[in-house]
Length: 425
Image (cartoon, rainbow, N blue to C red):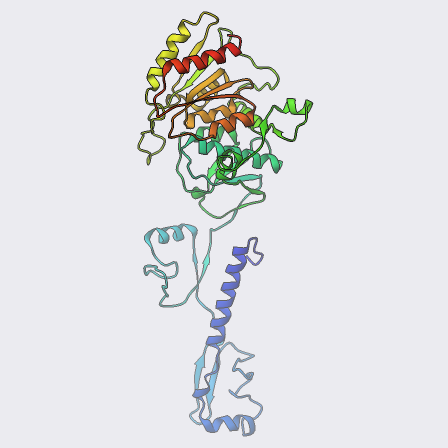
């Protein structure tokens, strides 16, 4: 108890000691008014000389040396007025369970009255709080604060921040992680659990927790994935193997390695130097944008970024079936109905990824090298999110900018046909 391990314990001990000394001194303060005036002089020079101001074997402050009880001696009336010499405050122990029960009922720890700001107990008591033991976590742990935790793009920025934090601090490949925000569970938690060795919520801790090695992961808003939307980041992506052979300080492999980490988390093989494509022909993944219920406070509706999405998909499906040069597999990317592992697999197997501007395209962070991105952008959502990700991964990127939210299917087919020809199909 007297060897505090954390600063809060030291503060608590100091406060208890301060209160104890204050009450001790207050209870032992000499009661000068209890003595008749004529006895004061006699105590120093009269017949009581040598006995001290209060009579008996006492010191100047009335504290008796040989016994626990101290009295004020009135020689005229021969009576003792007792005062407390030890001033022992009552000590009562309260367990952790009792503390939780009182907190639940809004009661003061010290008395049975309702607690409120400025509450003062009727009788002062010194309480010993038992059962509040600090739990120590010895392993290095990432502390993460999420904001828009149900949106894929913003969650990927949190994943990336945690990944970079673990890399620059030399943590294991899958460190432990604690959410220090108050958000609830969401479908994207599946990937958090796959990426990290353990996942806990600070709000569910039953008592104080101490970390031997804690790393505060920066907010996702502080990563290049988000900062790049408003700041110029002159950087291009490449694989680690390419940079090892041809060093270039204007290129980075960080985002490519991050994508590999996501694929490895779901036990997909990671091969940086060889890309295997489906034997039956190249996959063209059309990422669909559907209504979905991300969390209880979400209405389940998404804004339309491509008003005739179904028409465009049906046109592409017809084109793929009649494509004579090679067999094209058009994949219907209904991510709202797929597990995260299935989504990552669809991204990994795609030669071309096409879709309207939306959070689902964030999956291109785990796309394989040489994957081609075709983004359909309405006039209301011309933002560089996915152009930047493609650049930082070293992926080929194309965009179709619309006047409004309606896409002309022949224009989309023409653009896709040009991309397929460049792939030899």
